Image (cartoon, rainbow, N blue to C red; front, side, top):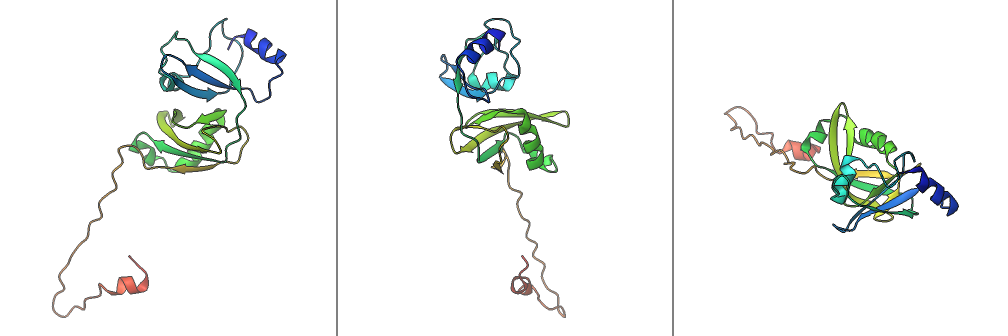
Length: 179
């Protein structure tokens, strides 16, 4: 955002952290964000590509910016947009680390995180206590839906016929608590 935006916001005595609702009135899409710095040219806001995609916004397009106060997040649920996300050893830790670069989350948005030189996209399926929440210095529970396009591996059941002299022990596994 431009320095003039900071001047105007300072005069209005807005609350911190500075959080904003961005709306593309042409597509009736909105999201929420923080601001990294106030150094853009007058009339310009720099947005990450994934945020522009959420807003259905083209480069140079108009976006309405308004200051908002958001409740602090207690819970969020994400759906990876590719099964590749399952290749990550500890996806929850990777996501929690990546979310340190975000100020807020909006239900329905697709966010992009970078891990091991690969971009992973995750849809924000749910946030609590509201549809848009602040995630700055919060203790938030994180959950995952199955990735888009994920198919549960089919369990292969092997049926071996017992030969004479061998006992059939197939019933024991259930009795012992194994499955």
